Length: 330
Image (cartoon, rainbow, N blue to C red):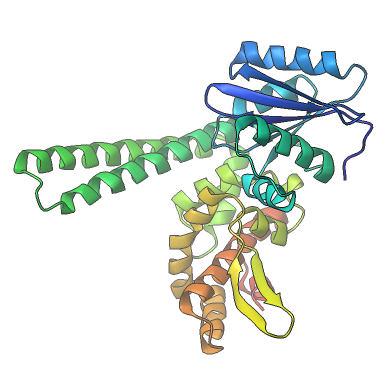
């Protein structure tokens, strides 16, 4: 939990603006907005230091799809403690606090209160080569999503021949660009010994191919920041969440989905392959279905086990071993 001895700055990040709320050690709130650019970063630090002299200010912000990256790096480089928080956690913290207003200023205050009360883990930037890999992998995924949206237009019944040819050209171009991003990611991994070694370990798991391995390497935090295989599953939002109350309420157990959506999405199709060809996950899937679990729920459980297997080979520095892996899927 946080302590009253430290000032806390909550920052609501948007594409062009940083709405900041500073909670002083004596509980007073100060609000101000800054541009989301290097000048705004410097002004934010000056403002925070001016309102909390002598206090070791802690900064908190939500993960907003990349708009927070530059600010987080700037604060870390300046020697400040900064936390990049899962938005879902902040959202539910607001529900528990009876939050009524949804404005940038109110969001900043909520983030500040969450950072003060929950003391989320400090963030540190990934290694430069991992940041580059992440950019390539995310661009690949974005291009493929755009291609899927364009391809869906081909089902429009009133699409003219000329328009259909245009859509087909765009789909082909997007596919080529996505393949180029994957090729660049593969080249970066091959040129980086540490990444190449990790990719080799991941590829030893039946069901994990080149694309999945590159996504895991790009999106999973450094192992020294993930204490266990269960923590890796939680980071992906693949931890089970029960819904039970008293003797009468027995809801279906579901995945939490309060983690890295990109990594979770990347594991879905490989899991469908793994439950067919990976003997460990196939056995686990068959046991769940035989016990009466719906097939999609069994797939979700296997996704969780797959990311735990990925963590295991990376942590143990050893290729996939069915005997060892079977202990995870009991």
